[in-house]
Image (cartoon, rainbow, N blue to C red):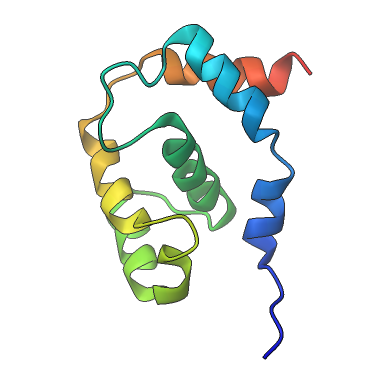
Length: 102
């Protein structure tokens, strides 16, 4: 059986993960984070944007119906639920720095 990466995986591969992680470290975006690091948050936000989700409930429903997508980057459904408890912090700075200062 041949394997071909999904478009979503190909899009994620275009993001410089090492640079993103160094910026997260610089701004301490993952400080005291145990279950939902900045990279996972970015993956969920990209998926939500690409699929035009309007609410967290809509996002959770979509992720639970896509069994193969949840294996791509861990349990995205659980991580999407985790978005409800997040507050704006350094992770937003990390994302802006990674994409605005190329």
